[in-house]
Length: 189
Image (cartoon, rainbow, N blue to C red):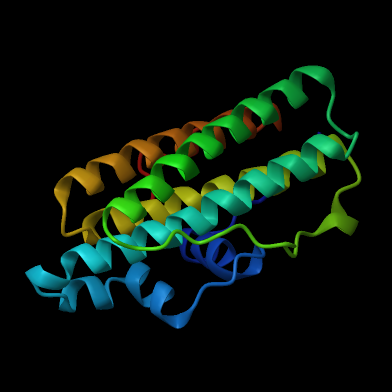
């Protein structure tokens, strides 16, 4: 089995924020980079938190669509298909919680895109689908890691950290399924 070369963390974050099909506004990218959240005063923290959550919601909706693509590809063997659908279910739970929280904060949750720009032509084998999913999960880990310290509300930071942990487990399991070292280093960056 061929080994997938995972990009460095900065490249992974870029994949998550742009090249994977997720198109974010400049404001959303700035939020994840910390500029807006650090500049927000206490009165703006709720709005800033809602924007961070909406960015995460957009990514979760993309992951749901990506796993759907993998499931419908007919490239996944039964145990792998079951795993992909389980992970998709996790992303659906994340999206549901994020959408409800954005609403509670007075924001409007983002909707799923009608179409994502996934590399469909490059998905020819089960390994290709797993590599694609692993890259998305790695990008999610990196993005949540960057977002957690930006929340004004520490309870929201804890919830995002919990989702980060789930994304990291997805990434490790996908690496294992590809025959790679599941946890390549002692730290996530």
